[in-house]
Image (cartoon, rainbow, N blue to C red):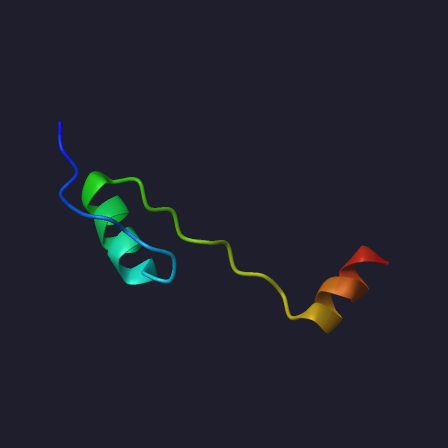
Length: 42
C-alpha cells in the first residue's frame, strides 16, 4: 500500500465528496437560533 494523496484541514468539500461517494455522509440536523433554543430549555 502506498500513500497517493493527503487531505488537509479546511478541505471540507473534498472530505464531503469522498464520504458522499462512499455513502457515509450524514447531514447535520438543523438547530434553532440561540434565542429560541434557550427559551425551549426553560
